[in-house]
Image 1 (cartoon, rainbow, N blue to C red):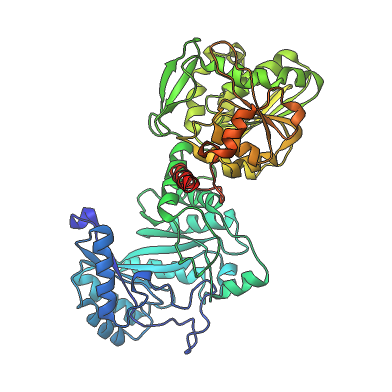
Image 2 (cartoon, rainbow, N blue to C red; image 1 turned 120 degrees about the vertical axis):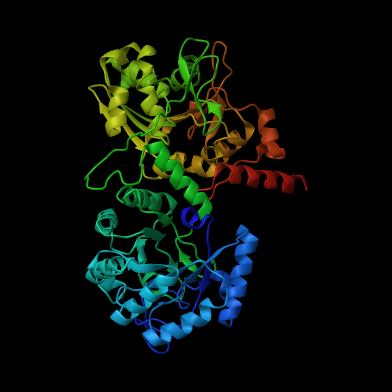
Length: 572
């Protein structure tokens, strides 16, 4: 719209009172997911007349967005469920109420009679018309289950007819219907990608009070998608959508009082940022899977991070996203050995038995690679590593540089294998990497791990991985005699670990290094417990207020803000 009109157009949502062919005269029935108000916009929910809807919606757009130019949006129920003559009369009244430069009309594939198509062509001859078509899914079994009242064949024909008339089409799709899987979502994307559409709106399924799905969910709850699961589904859909097709929406919002499930910790804005960040960090882009069956993600642009040589001669990177270096400037390898490898006693463990290691924030790979080096030299027992990492770019860049740090990498393609397939295996070592937010990845694991390395960025940059709620997840993954190692000795982090059920102590550190933290569910694994005076500070001052993230999905800045509020309340 900005390209065409020189400025963005802001939608004025309208309910023309046209109802829906899938509902009875008393308003009951309809699609299983649809609320009683037919998805009427919240900003006009209390307006009694069209004029009042326009006034309320215009005032909202001006106040919220500084809107100056508008697009009429026939949103609620079905915008073409009337005779062509009735549509002309009602549209004429509604469109005369305010200045607008284009029209979007929400409707169904089975409500586009020849007379209606003629009417849409008339409108389109005077101003740009977009038809927002409720496709929802290409799976006919699902369409029947949700009482949609039309087939995928109907959707396909409607798209082809509208396109032949020069009318722009936006396909609405819902991901998450009961019984559907990733294969169904991807199939819908591939079917739409082969058709002449002009935009897509993605919605995650919401179970809303008053909708039939609400009753179904109450009787027998079915799978609903949290933020991370839905992001995975949406990314795979977008990867299959041609790059010239605008993705006009990526998720749904519903008034909290009406929403049964899912309950997210992210709002729309935060989710969009997360989705975008994930695609960039994983090397995904729109359209890369069009006509392809598989793609692991590639990096279209130069993603090289700034490389720094640390004081011990080893390398680290600067993260532009987190605004921190991955390691201490004193020495990346020095930090790995002093804060993680040595205090974990991994060498002794590997001489006795196979060992499972959870490496959270794999980064350049120092912690895993140094541990693998120990296992490869001992050649006694197997080291099995599960690595969690959010940014595939750093692993990719590390694969081009780390052979200078670890000699045994020169003859092995360990990092390249991890980049290409997210795994590596040899006689004495193996790595399986899970890419994505560690809070979500960790919840997909099962215990128990002998050693956990937690090497996130600082709590001021990466607070989401330093919360009591995340520590509780790790407590469920660590073996009774297992140990968790991290470089941080901050009191809020100790407080969170203690609150999560860990016994906490200080590790020795080493030359040029302060000590780190060692934690375990077993008290006898801690040689140097937290001193009494520090425990008193944790218990009696604001320094002992831990970071909280009850939904395990809040952004770092929100976690920090909530802790600040808790500190003020503590002082009061």
